[in-house]
Image (tube, one colour):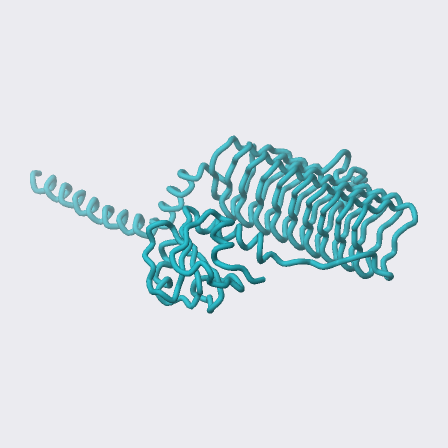
Length: 351
């Protein structure tokens, strides 16, 4: 892609300092950029690269001094947001896929919308419905009676089990399984387990993005639901009958146990573990590697078991100080023993 700096500035409503006809051929990090690249400066720690970057143009905050005449600037109040907007409009990757590949296996009962494309070795079983302008890439399997909306993008090697529903404008990355059996077993008195039938489904609402190698289990009864606009990172486990609220963002390696409900607009760091049958309130933030063992009201939490963020950080500070505390206690014990010994000697002298 090639655009002029003026095109980029007009799109984000920025002010140019330098050459408006400068050509932008690519985007890059400020310390890796080359001639023809557009980059941005947002964090103060990267200011040191402004004078030495080889980029042709940099998006900066208003008032940033131009280091030399060989570089042009675009002033924006939010350089990072402006940069991302330009990337989305002009430099986002395209995923060309047209038509239905001859190797695709599609049951004759399947309803496929206009301009929908199927890659190599795609399998779509009976009773399925696929909306318009959806792309389903190679080796993906959609099992019977599942429904997929319009303008959805499913990358290679995804499995959508039977009876599941996926909305429109959804992105599902490679290796993800939607609708695998929930982890349900009844112990026998004689030992071993009986499998509890998992006869529900999974509902993925519109505008959800799901990373690679994510497992979302079907409900035992009813539905496991990922609500509109939620974003799931790679390697996440969502158990049966979980509900994840609208616009909630969950980082990698998080696991949510069965029948728990996560509210809308929550943010979870990586490797968060959530026990079953609890509720996480709307707008809750949970720090990485936290363990959630009970229902949480809105707030910021961290630790295992998770505590209010401020309290948890204070406790962590005290834990790190334990060696100093132990040394001081020993010193105080020595001083106390010396005082007791002096008192004892003084008492014996008086006798």
